[in-house]
Length: 505
Image (tube, rainbow, N blue to C red; front, side, top):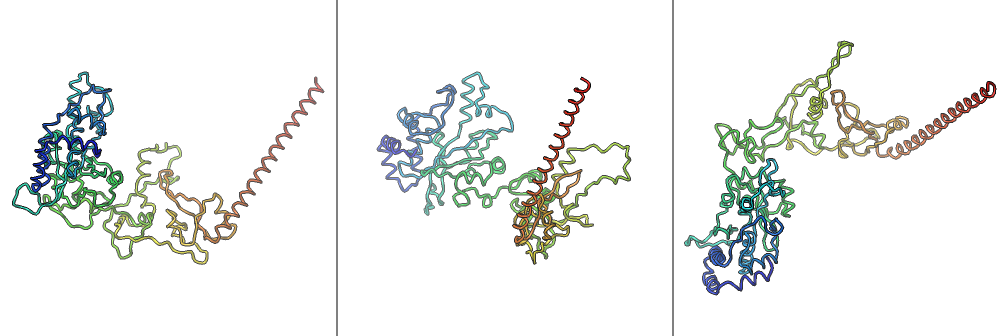
């Protein structure tokens, strides 16, 4: 599209009358110039239908200088080539133009003809049927946009009062009607990703502009953070996707709020969800409506501590939930020795492994578990080591969820016999709890290594190396002794067999 040769060739065949008209009517604006070029372009070039048997049976949607030159000299081209030629023509007149394309993706959750077409599955025996499907599939796949600058003249109806990108459909002679794209695609058509490319090949997501129903389109989009990185827009103002400034209409039913991307009802919130700030944006059948972006996840104080945050003392819980009680097996005295054991259930084990461990982590007689929000917490600062003594919790260990959870001035030693070495040296230590595991239907803590003072770490590592060397040497000596013992038995048996043969022949 940016090829100077293509632009010069297109500019050279523009009639002088059209060129003079554009020069004399420059005050009419960009929209008038585009409409004038569109009328001439429609007469000068013809659309070439897509054919299933073209080339090697596949259609090449790549826009190259060779394909545009071929379309120029033949005065006909496919839809995407016609749009690219018109974009180059507008740029030859110094009109800011973007090439817009819909990145259609196959909907793999349901097998359909579109899915088969995208993955090269031939499900039709008629070339006419395939050609019709290709025509429907490629309908409104690409178009262009022109930039219309702001105008302060409000007396003429054709003048625009704000600067914006205007939709231009050269194939159907439609200007500034972006919602017609979705209607032309057919009923139920959804275009989750639409990208515009300017003359510098900078990509901008304009899906919101052409979405007939954004609430239905947005769930089909990929991860916004990953998508923004692919477009290299990040958090800059170049990204036009701004749902906060573009409010959607409220759903017409209570069920419509359940999975809505922007609005929600309090009755649809989960057990660990909370709305903050509690400022309704509307009312639906007497129920307050909140924005989905204000829904936050609550966690217990121990869960926040595992993430390196501590609940402030002056904060009250947002809500309480019932603790999940563990069903422990009966004591051995109450179980018959002849009774069959309860069969193990995989489903019960999976649920127990994935559930919240706060019931086991926080002991207490209260059956209600308090939950807090992120705004009620602060960064956790671990206590320091004083006089070589490791600060421990009420269970006598240290929860080493991360490096930040270790006491200041301590290190985590992951050696198999570090606990024995520290006890022999008389160094204060604490077992390091690193997680939980499911054992016999219960969640039990997992320990890995010990936490000691930094000053004693090197001494423990050296002593551990000496202990390991001593254990290895003792194992080698024991192994050699066992080998010698077995050889002695073997030799005695050989001598006994020889004596028996000599005496009894």
